[in-house]
Image (spheres, rainbow, N blue to C red):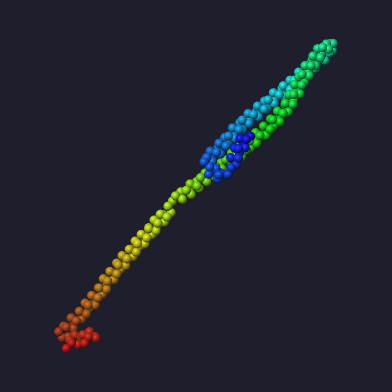
Length: 234
């Protein structure tokens, strides 16, 4: 059962160590279960062979005992007929078959022990295979998850974080420049509009003063008055 023990240790090994190994853990687990099933087939064949040998020994033992009994009856018959010599020969044959039957019984006891041990090993292996099958999918799922995590970590490690941040900073600076330019254009547009209105307002004041001067200079009107604060000219 050395192969069985080795395979079972592989099944129960830590899945993380398997991921780090050169072999694919899925293949290892699948192969381990297949090897265990092959061992089970061989073990069942061995059990069947041992049981067949046991049955054969039982038949031989029973046949030897039956033959020994027949020779004993012949010895009795020969002795009844006064054939002491034949009775002696019959008893000799009876003894030989009896010894054979005794040897067969001893061998049968050993065979029974072997068959019982093989059956126990077979039941144990069947139980281990059943347990391995139930855990195989879980281990495979964990192996796949570990591989996926490892690939993700590798992808994250290969990403150029510095260049990505630099690109974001450049874009931020560009956006800020566009915003400043927009604000400047809006501010310049507002100033031009204010200048136009101020110009209109100033022109209105000049026109009003010009109209007043024209009115004062019409005939019959008094000498125009100078704006307050200006001294009269001589």
